[in-house]
Length: 164
Image (cartoon, rainbow, N blue to C red; front, side, top):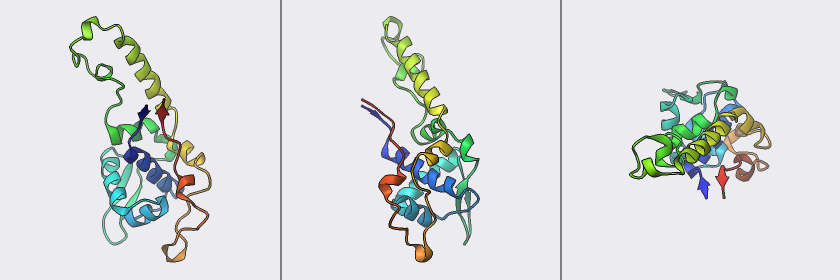
């Protein structure tokens, strides 16, 4: 089974929360509440997302995070790459000379083709599409910081990328 890590899945959830209120700056605590995740997990996700230029960080008492780009221009490929590194189904899909049997391997060209198809599929899905397909809007917390009971974590998580 091919599956993205939980952190990549959670990063997508956090990014859809940010995309639901694109002009707002949200704190780590607010993002954690709205995404149904623990604050330390959200803080851990935000670092590579900021390093990849997908979110902007703001310091100070009103600091927090917001999307660095429009949700339509952020692709699932960028999110996966920010969290997991370069996309490669096999070592030889990424780097020449990474395998001792590379010269005699009959599968290498097909693995590269499969890798390209997966990369193209991830590039074809935007964060805006993930938000749109996530179900009801990821509303900001109600007064007092309490999330509406109707917004369950299960409905907020986008479908996982998996191949079985």
